[in-house]
Image (cartoon, rainbow, N blue to C red; front, side, top):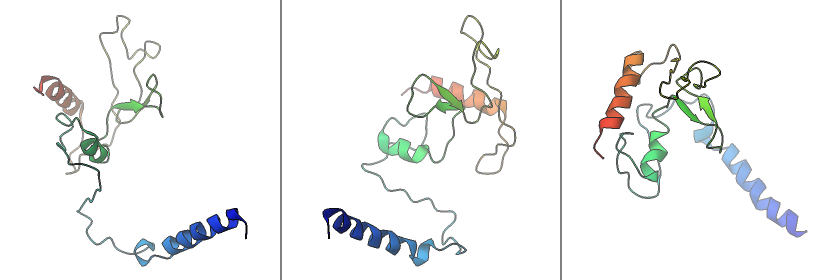
Length: 135
C-alpha cells in the first residue's frame, strides 16, 4: 500500500468507530439534561461575564451567554447581530452622526435560562453592571 492508503486506513477505522458509538445514536435520552460538562485547559476564573478575563472562563461563557453583536468570522472590523436584530450604523440610523448614541433593536422572543423574557431594561442593566464593575 502507498503511504496515503496507510494514513487513510486508521482515519477510516476511527471514523467508523465513532459513527457506531451507542452513546451517539439518535433517539436516546440525554442522561443528565440539567448538567453542562466542559473540558478546558486551566482553571476558570469566573463564569460571570463581567468578571472573567481568562480563556478558560470565556470558553464556557460563550456557550451560556449571547451578546448583542459579535465579530463576523475572524474579522475585527465587521459585526453580526446576535441578540440585536441589526448592527448600528449611521446608514441605518441606529448610530448617531456624532457617534455617541447607539440604538440596538432587540430580537423578540428571547428568554433567559429560567424562562423570563429578555427586555431592553435587562440589556441596560447588564451594560451598566459591566461598566461599573471594579475589576
